[in-house]
Length: 215
Image: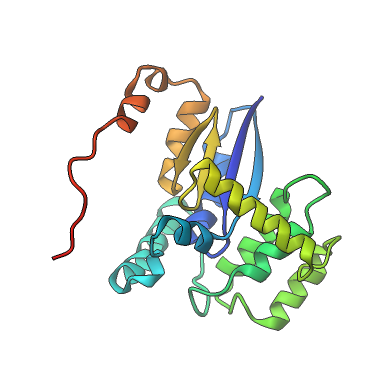
């Protein structure tokens, strides 16, 4: 059985789309998926990047594109009442409910992602967050030190591994980023000979021609 690590943050619509499409992408394969919620903002800060929602025109395009992608793939999606929002309570809730020494399960991730991307409500509404926590019944306190530590450790581990965005998948030591990498992930898991033909490694060896300069 193959093992796939799925880094995600519920603030990312692309992580939601990938989560919903993943079973179909992996159909016919013997795969175990490990879900690792991480703070997307922490990845951005480490790599010196801005998120899509922090760039005006890109923010608008993102919402249009995800609406189209959901339509094409038959995925139910409703934009939350406001975006972006602070995902920390949701991320800590996921880690608070993870069994000792394990990562959050698919069911918990699904409940959190549906909380954000279905219904069109405010994802950070205190009453909705309280109801979600009551439904998930985490063993730890989502606001406690353990949940905060687990999220921080997961984010730090992702950064150390080279993860720069969500969703990111790891399979056979390779990192694949984005909703549109799902066919590539499935091909890698099926043993597509392209991955052993040198193109994967050659792409990483391309020299940098010049660095961006400010005028």
